[in-house]
Length: 251
Image 1 (cartoon, rainbow, N blue to C red):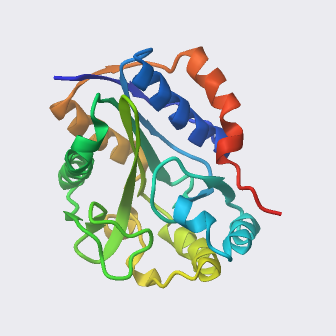
Image 2 (cartoon, one colour):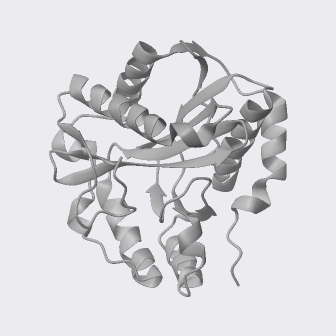
């Protein structure tokens, strides 16, 4: 099995740095400086905007709406529309070495979605793969609970020599996501149904980040050779140089 380093480091005090660390990690993996990395961590409150958001005329208003609701606006590494992270979610950033990353797009999406569904099954939750009608940041590899509420979104970024699979799993406080996305998506001109947004704890009270993270790591270990570790200092240093790439450029 392909080896991966499991990392749980997070940088919630500087949300853009959290994104930049994912960026520098996949660059290091592509260069062969480090093996593949699966980072599962607890983020700070963030609205992560995608490339399609940044070209919308309402983007500056969306950025200001995120800030007004206490969420730091950042520009995400992978594709998709605006997604929300906060302290009761789990963020994942999977950097995978691959000489031909485009050929494995579907395989990687399927792998992470199946890992999450498998983990949820061990927690007694009916996780299902597929987009819900009206969900935010829609995608065919989203994971929902019982065909009712979306709890996981995922996107990919391809570079020469590696791929990055990144996303978020909502454990608790789904209402915080709805509250900030209503004005953000209004500014971006995106139609969606807030009723499709929720959390795992809505369906299974008592769940928290620790329990869900343990289930995900266990499911990941069943598929891959994993060793727990930390990111090299050089990766963190490079991330600091990449910060401007992930800060919104609006007046």
